[in-house]
Length: 284
Image (cartoon, rainbow, N blue to C red; front, side, top):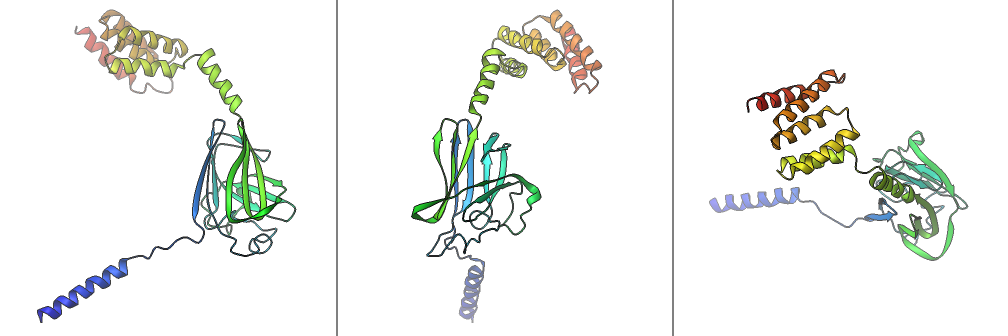
């Protein structure tokens, strides 16, 4: 009897395990991600790659004149780390879904703000952020699997290519690497480090007991760039206190306290911080 019960229990365990197991098979249209840097811009494209499989693709499998997800499964997504110009249209940094409307003589390329669409069934033209037309070219060789890649990488520009069957669409992508470099040059070589950079460097030196003279130089530079920042002034008082300059530290804390009290947007807790610091210093 016990043997029968054991056999039954074992069979039950196997049945439960089989019910919970999931069969994993290859995707008919596998997902791919391609990453490309253009100048100082990172571009990432995630899409599914259907195969032609001896079918007529454009005009039949993918009807002319209708919105296409530009791949399979979930709509293709494109991410730009900076502002770009795509197909002659200015596009802000961000992630977008990529749709197209294929035709024999002209394609419409669309970037849409809804990145969670599965296919094109709920595509909403009102959410388009860019739309332009481009002429396709005919390929001599057949591309079996739908492919998105990048080519013509010259300087900070290039082409994002859509290829399938015997059709090829090259979309010009331009980035403003020169403008970004000029901005860096101005910030680093002309304007110098920001107030926040000096402030953070000074705080790091204070918190890690490094050169207080250097920390004082940096906090003074931060205050010079942002004289209204009473929290900078408070940290200057802390630096002076660590240097043994008690009278100067109290005077600086009093100035920070006054500024904090006069700030219309609030004191961010620096009234209490300054009062506490001054009380500690006056005990010495």
